[in-house]
Structures are given as C-alpha cells and as structure tokens.
Image (tube, rainbow, N blue to C red):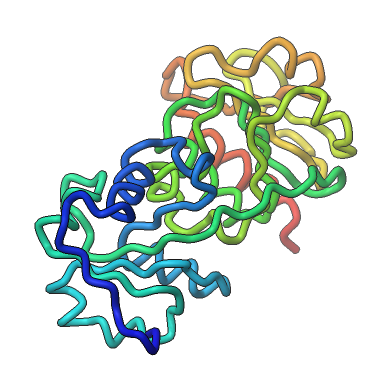
Length: 259
C-alpha cells in the first residue's frame, strides 16, 4: 500500500466518490475522464496479471479490514469507503466489495495485417463483452468497433469481457475509411447467404465482420467483404445470437490452424 496510508471517505458528496459513480453508472463517462472503473476481485486480478497498475484501489471498509492485506502489491492510491457509501458507487445489483480505477489505455493505430474482429454497430454490452472473450481465446488480438457500437470500456462490457480487454488491441469509434489499411480478407457473417462455415477453407489471418443484432452487417461493410459465411442450423432457428455466432466462427478459424 502507500506509505501515507489509505484515504477514508465517509461523505456522499466527496468529489472522488462522485467521479466513481459516474464511471460506474455512465457507459461513456470513461471517455471524458480518461479512466475506467473495474469492479470486483476477478477484473482487478486480471488487470494486475497483465501488468497494469491502478491509479486508485478502492475498498469497502469492512472488506479492507478483512482482506486489504491481499492487495498490498497492487499499487496506486488506496481509498477506503464506508460500506453504505460504497454501495452507492456500484452499478451492480449486488455490489462487489472493491474496485480499481485504471488510466484509459491510449487508442492504437489499426494494424493492417493481424487477425481482427470488426464490430459493426452491435448494441448489447453482453454480446460485445462475450465477443471480446472469444476474440482473446481464439487468437484475434485486434478488435475494431465501428461508430455506433456499444462503448468498449463501459462497465457492462468490462464485466462481460471478464478480463479479455487487457490482452486485446481495442480501437473504437471507427469509420469505413479507417479500415482502408486492412490487408486481410474480410469475412462477413450472414444468416441467409454465403458458403457454410463447416465447408469453408478459412484464410488466416482474416477479419470477421459481426453485424448489428437485428439488422446484421451494414450495406457499406458488406460491400467490402471478401466473402460471406453462414452457420448450418439443422434445428431450424432463423438466426443465432451474434455472441454465439462469433464464438463459432472464431473457433473455426482457430481450429483450422491447429496441427
């Protein structure tokens, strides 16, 4: 911990507490504050495992008394908040007892030759976070989010990502022009056209284009697609959830590379 000891917060009107509430409850507040809120032990440990250091480590008072010693090496300023006040910060129905504030990672340039996932207007934070987990698991290290896609560093996407964020190159707010440097084939998912995934010879590296939950891949991005791929559905459903479809497609790419 710090040599000066923890900062104790007992006032609802504390300035830092107000900022934490905005970070935890407003999906885009991280863009203005240029920092993100990680709530819960799992996310905090995942960040530390990737070598990230919080600017603030924030604890519910009773939890700090019980388990604060576990976080001695976390770094950052230690903040201890009265239990009732800590609950006002959380955006969760059952608040976690601790969280980190991390500086928002700087947005990198698009890499043209790496395996990528393109998110084209996805709205559901759970879907986006799930896709980030699949991207990390199957070797797609760059995720490109087009304008209109759910905020990648929002608290809900962070929770759904379960730590995947910290191993990925994440770029958001992109226009079509920003994709012009991509040198890999674009594979667009579709429920009604293209070759079936289980029969396709998939290129590597490639970029999978995943479209809006209801409207699918936009016409502008569809025009840029090298090919369309669909998933066989013998059960007869009209379409798959985009998070499930992404996991199937990204796994197929990864399996195609296996010896």
